[in-house]
Picture (cartoon, rainbow, N blue to C red):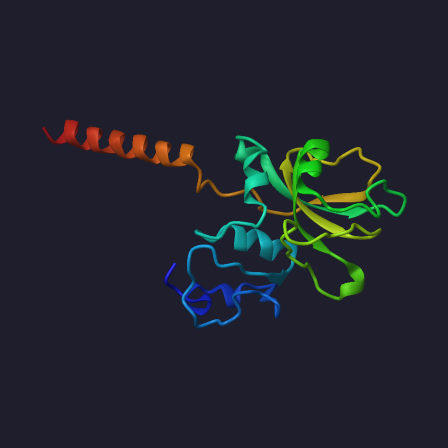
Length: 189
């Protein structure tokens, strides 16, 4: 908040580019709480963007509903099979969470020419097509392993989600700080 995209280095993330239709497209305008950013990015770049403190994906509410144990979650690329039952249906994060224990974060459509189109599925009626590559956050082992809906599933390297932004994390930080203060106070007396 208060820093521009350029100052934060978000325009220089390898494999990521701010989409032309992004609501916040001025690179020098300071960001405010609630500003929306849309990137065209590779899966690895999405993982790097997720590790930027203060940025949360559009599907943050659904990701939080996956539950705790973020250390056991990873990002996966899953290629939709031509004979999948998902083809022709709307991409609904809630359904993915229930069926595959994963939440879609982005979709790449080979015909679009974009490496990976990061979309908010809350705003768009996104219809799944055969050969769509869906970037998912889900639990280890792969959330869709063994499913006939996908031709293959690939884990994105170094994609464990960061620990930040939840109320429980804030409490952990407070307890750790109190413990450090108590330890320092006990050793200085």
